[in-house]
Image 1 (tube, rainbow, N blue to C red):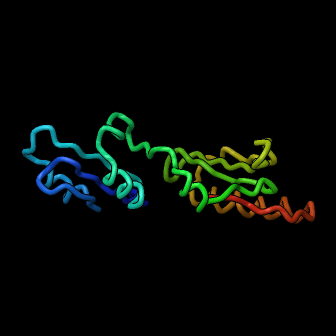
Image 2: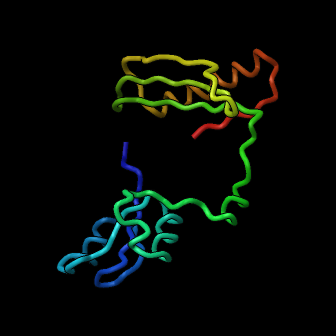
Image 3: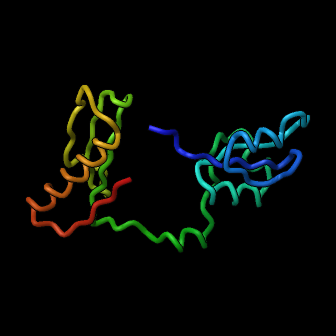
Length: 147
């Protein structure tokens, strides 16, 4: 499974900007004393960081600052009449487990595993299917959150 794509911000380098590969970023910072750069998990976070300043991010290891009020309005509130499912694995393949929780109370509704040979993708799928079966069995109209 390939690594998730990262984006790189160069605040101080040959050509400051946002780059979509480590190779491009590295070429902008090599030989620059005190170069300021950092990686981010997605383009939006990288662009927001670039429009800010290095000091706001330094030492925070990919931490995106709190969302602004306008950004929160775009996202909205979660629907608490829901369940949230997730999975984890310690390898690819490796030990895998999944669970579903009440989104509001965080109460565990179901949990399976660990299974000796699984992947995160399989776990996420099984968690979703288990969640659907759980809701159908209870004739529930709740929604499911998953990643």
